[in-house]
Length: 186
Image (cartoon, rainbow, N blue to C red; front, side, top):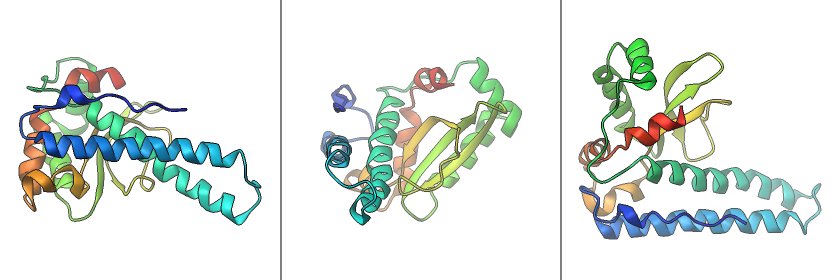
């Protein structure tokens, strides 16, 4: 069984109210609970049934909701941590020309209409980086690519504090990135 991770160290994060964070933590804990419930349910149903088919489709939603939130909370820290001059910055510069160019594309994607996730992903096989829009939790992932930086752009991630001002949330998120955590993922 999966246990929800404790992200309470993020309480007091600048630009994120404790109310918003606690609500978001509770939502994440629901994904963990539902992932566990589905794993248990699979043990007791006919794997060839229509019920099993639908539950397997649902499993990707719950699992990815759990893992994407863990990556999201895991790449934030109070005060933020700057990107080092190591391999990730070199790859960003090689791909986009500069960190500023990468950030412009990443934040523009985050500002798009719709709900989902924006992810800086690494294709280890080819060594390439991509900014990727993940619609919902379970559509748009690049098979085999590793999520490095994960930003939640579902309304629950910002509406309590920012209402419809998604750009202000994006700025708060960008100022809270723990680039050391992101670099460790590469």
